Length: 297
Image (tube, rainbow, N blue to C red; front, side, top):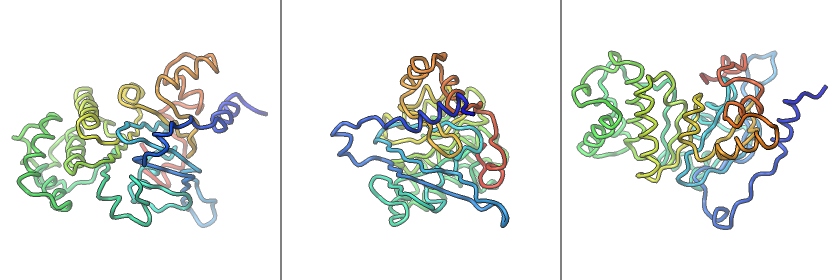
């Protein structure tokens, strides 16, 4: 028996991608993903879990591109594949024309990543963690310190807190330090994997404002996964919906809302868009997938 959700997903997958103008087609994209697939083995007697299933996308320079999906839908796996932390099973990924498999070091020089659970030397201070990151990227120590102070101040962390061990700071403050660490290297592609999850409202607004500033003043391209529909609508130029490892819809926020109203007679909200194309809430867990293969909360 065919359900409404099956019909919606079938139509979304079958819908042709929007035509690119000659200028868009000629420009090397910031991120090109073609037929990307990743499977995980979860036990000798069990079938592999397909985390990312034949995903293709093209992100233009200077975009903020959002990826929405329920827990376990494959968002973090996709980010890790792009950032070279995982190997591809099938398909191709290019960052500014550099293949992530053949030119891994070239890719690492132009990207940085912030995850929902950032890793630190927690006995060390924000200043010491950022100084260490700066040295890894060959930055001048004085320039790095000055820029770190500026970024942290913009995110609401004053200079007097820079000497306190990270383990004594709140989860929100630690996440701001993670964002500052990523921005310190001036990446041209910034991968933000749920960067505002768990932050208080004020900290969340600080981070969102800084993301907009990064895009506008540093010509950065940003890929953002988020559970916050308001955040996605505010920040993202385009949004892709990921469901069971597949992209089932992609458009601007307004384009998605118009489509759901015109074609399906639903309320023109991103929540309605998400429920229609996935059949679940953003807070739903897909199941064993995110327990066995990724921390995709």
